[in-house]
Amino acid sequence: MKFEEPALSHNAKRLFWIVVRIATDRGTESVSIRDQEVASRAGFPLKYLKDAQLELKTADLLTIRQGGTRATYELIPVDPSPI
Image (cartoon, rainbow, N blue to C red):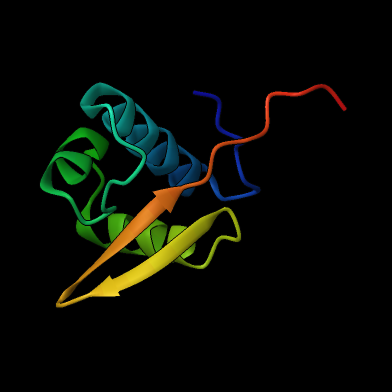
């Protein structure tokens, strides 16, 4: 599946692609950016991780579904048809 990279800071882009890789590995399009595997793969200090998570949360590319105490961030596939 093809994903479009949003206009984000370096750390948020890195986090975005980590989420894409995890979603691809799991065979799903929905992975929480607060997922423990996302945090461990990113290896950011906590402040940078939280900043990147907040930036992704507000990105237009991601839709947010609130459910209980967790939010699920879904990556929206890009239409592969040519422009």
